[in-house]
Length: 208
Image (cartoon, rainbow, N blue to C red; front, side):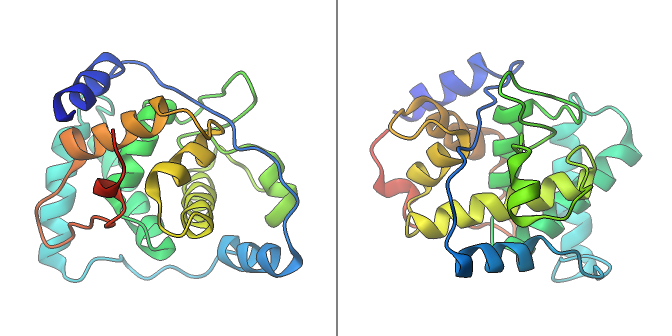
């Protein structure tokens, strides 16, 4: 199965499998919680545990991302934002990188056939549902904040079942292709063995 996942990752390395989160009415309490999560707050310098860990992670991930994002400055700004927003939402930054790879292949202005936008392919209805009027989903930080908060919402809703949470994020619940590709990319391309490594127990509990 490991080789099957790797094959899927390689096969789709140059493409993207953008989906579409499905609009569903939210309970008032859930909506208020998501609105609070989306609301901007002053960011600290970074979300790393130390300067050394920041240098190590950024250097390693920058090397892996170079072919897709040639500008060093753009890569570092992107990776710092990915790391900050992922940690803020309670997600593994490497998992978020895998989602971005499969959703948009790191294209900032990607638009899917269903209208999902940006790196994490966020559907515009989320702005009206939990955001602020005028939020630009092509903005780096806006897109990553929305995407991370939405993925964490689905992960909580599925009680930690990453496979089902990823399917919901892509709007393909019940189909294995998308979560298999994301988990495959996470394990084979973005897995980081340093101090920041993080792996929800539910990942290996799912077949495929």
